Length: 392
Image (cartoon, rainbow, N blue to C red; front, side, top):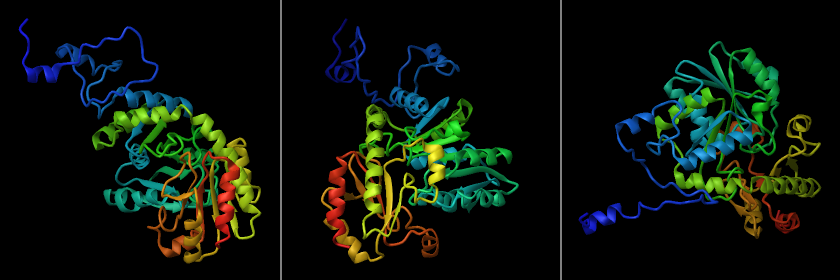
């Protein structure tokens, strides 16, 4: 056989590697397309039982492996991963509603989820309204004839109000509605909402599921039929997760249980420390008996209350800035759930789009801070907080 030219060898070389055994770590399938032997082989891809791949926007081995893990951890039949948590919540909602339908959303919700309904889905004909989801009578009175979906978090951002997922699922189903639950703040280590009757669970996998602040990803978990529909939306909208990000997230999930155990243990210790500090006006942590929804947390969370702690200090921007600058190892950051402890300011980040009146109504003031407790030694986190609190 005639030796191919230099350019041809550059393009086609390196394809003859065959393994006689399997690698322990999953390789990265960093390819946009997959090849076929002929048209018959390609046609087999479209058979329902096919396990082959065509184009990485549709599916790729790395996201497929990640979906299997996430579905298993949540106790769902299937999962689909997305390019971000917001892509997941958007696709999850769109899988349940169309123009003319109504979405009932928790008033205590991540600000961008609220903005998605107000600014984007509403202009496409999807109606929405808000209700206090920790008050079932408020939820029931807000249901409309065209309500098709409830949207809530398990533990609300940022005041950590715990919603009674089982009761909400019963109410939703009694009115032929779907319950969509964002479980980012809790993770399947703490609660699996599908077990309480939720129809769809969404995570920003950027957070606890990955845990290392190096991936932006989301996931939707449900039964196979709902995931099939959600995947169609994701593929058509082009908000799929790439193979490298999926590979990183798959690596991150391997330490998930170990990380979450430490997050939860540290979260309780830090909450207890803050609760007795004279410069802290109020602590929001579902594991403290002083939290308004402690009884619900006890019922749902099985003694694991997570690593998110919010607390209220003096409403003085200058003093808060001094407190933040004095922190030595806790950085100000707009996200959460990494291995390192970080601080967030809800009024200036996650809920800045809310009107001043709405912020005030829900207690989102200048002095409200949200601490994502990491997996460091708890004594070191406390020491850093203690020395910085002296600046208030």
